[in-house]
Image 1 (cartoon, one colour):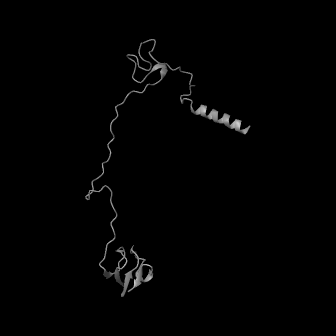
Image 2 (tube, rainbow, N blue to C red):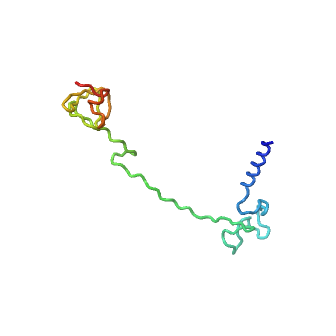
Image 3 (cartoon, one colour):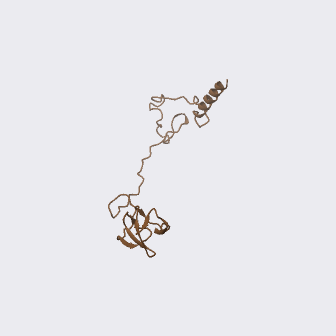
Length: 142
């Protein structure tokens, strides 16, 4: 019983949605095809002296409007010739230097920090809160 009611409601909703928005029922204006019997012109073609856009039975026929191209922004050429920008790689330090944040280190790199020498254990880019004395997984005392 509930399934039958649901089907009826859905069919009514589909029929309502398919209805033209002008308020008239689909059968109010019969569709004409071929030539207009009174003028000998194809249906929907305005008669001489009739304003463009007015068609048969008070319906509006769209007039053709030339399309113009919308300007688009062209990509700005980069100085490197590449289409996409790549992030700047971390700076590399000489093998024996003071530890600095924002530098890419590789295993085996040696640094000094607060008077102690350290050797890098794992490749990483240093951060201010990853000082060698606080990160034994990244640095070991030399």
